Each structure stands twice: as C-alpha cells, then as structure tokens.
Length: 265
Ligand SMILES: O=C(O)CCC(=O)C(=O)O
Image (cartoon, rainbow, N blue to C red; front, side, top):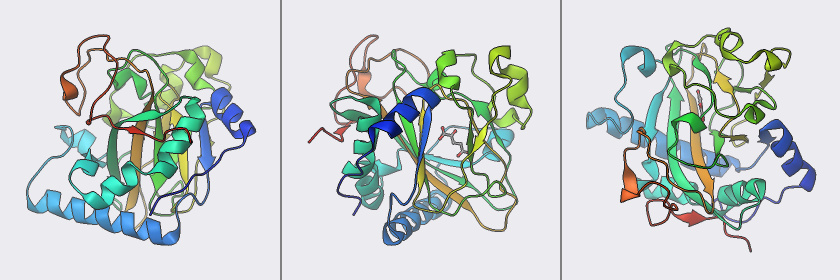
C-alpha cells in the first residue's frame, strides 16, 4: 500500500514555489483511505481507553480545535506504512527539489462533529525547531472535506512574508487573519481546499492556513505528515513533540527518529 510514485509536472512545482501550497487529487485509492482511516480510529479509541495524551497538553480552548495525536507512526505499523510511504514522501521531495526528505513528525487531526472550533490562521514554521524554512506538510483528507466540515484554507503567496509572530491556535476566528497580517497581503483572497477523501494538500511551513469548525454530523479526519528537506539543521525551540534526538544547536537532523524518506530514484 501507498507505494509507487506520484510524479509532478514542473508547472505544479512552480505553482507550489510561488503560491506556497498545492492541491493534489486522488493520491490515495479508496482502499488505502479506508485502511488508514480505520487505523486512525483505532488509535483514537486506544488513546481514550488508555487515557493517554499522545499530543500537546492542551487547555479546554485548544482541545476543541482538534484531537491531535502526534507521532502515531511509532505506535501503529498500519500508520507507519503510510507515514514512511514512498508515494507521499516523494511528492515532498519533488516539491522541495531536495535529494531526499526526512520525516519531522506525523499527526492525526480530528475535528469531531458539531463540537469543534476553528484552527486559527497561522504559519507552522514558527513552532518548528529548524533553522531553515523549507519544511512542508502533507494534509491528507480521510473524509470528504467541505467548508462545513472544516477543510483547509490557504493564503496564497504568504510564505514569502517570512516568519511572523506565533498565534494562539485556539483563539482564532475567520477575521483573525485580517488583524494579524501585514497590509501588503490584505488584498489577497484566501483559497478554500474542499476535496474528496484520498486527496491532499501540501503547504510550505510559512504559508498561512486556517480551518473552520466542523459543523456537520460526521468527523473530519486528516492525517498530516511533515517533511524536512535533506540538510535541515536543528534550532533549539520548545515543541509539542519534545526534544527528540538529542540534537544540538546547528546540528543537521539525522537518525531513526527523523527517517530519510522519498529518495530520488
Ligand atoms: O487540520 C487543521 O485544522 C489544521 C491543520 C494544520 O494547521 C496543519 O496541518 O498545519
């Protein structure tokens, strides 16, 4: 499962480079989607039954944004097969034009039906302990996602702004972006990423993104994998996955906690 390559056109890579995101349809087959979705459901059930956290210690406000289970690939072989899969990692490699990429972490993000808040507009890179800005996320829809379901939105070209201040992820509403953005971006319209399960988006770590609350009667399950281009260096910064790997300031990411995936063929 999840094998093979998903070759991109040069124009898709150029689009990603200029806009900071790319949407790709039918990356997973229906069978692959249901296998991964079932594995995520098992993880969510186990987490509840075992009274585990598997994510950041969060306050009430943040908990309503989504259920976040971090580094689930290490706990479930069925999820590991997806997270380290050549197909997804190779798309990340193509987009970053690197010889290979390394996994930073994965996380399953579930917005439960009629019981969630918006994910505030934010940039990811400002929370990541990396010196360079090339890392990116794959947001894989495991349910059909619409605006009502809490799909992703991007602000095209916002990765060119560079890192801005971190925000309170639990405190955002649709208007929050307008208050935080530099005036140069105020005329740019956010783009909405409705899509079918098995389709995904990739976004650059500096691209502003948002997801609304899930106001439907079914869950919004997404599997997110974050990749760093080869040669990314560690920067000391507190992060939800903890200080993994005992890296020192300026050291290149390496080792089994950050496996090299998606090597050039
Ligand atoms: O799924 C969401 O609500 C937000 C996801 C997100 O912020 C991310 O993948 O970086």
